[in-house]
Length: 158
Image: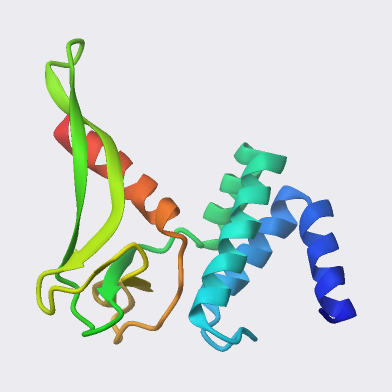
């Protein structure tokens, strides 16, 4: 490990919420960022996101929103490029609201086109319809996109 890697780790651990949000945004928004693989980019984004949420969740989320880091994304099969992918989930009955509420989403993703199945099948890319361009790879931790999607599903059913 190079000394610059140790400096980066120290910056992450000692960073304030706004700095961590800027770092996270830079990782997911810049497809030319210096990462050996997309998996390395994804892992780094997950680590920065986790520390940001632990340091000061409210300021971190606010800083992300201000940076526009909450770009709408879609999962793309990393094997065939299809957006026709799905994940299994479980729901539980909520007596107070009298409706089924999403209880959890399982890790495994399946592609409807090539029938590939894996916990790490998808690349997360900005929605082509929102950018007006073809998608550019931007690895977003799945948990973030899933949490946003789950919240949208809950509010759309109300």
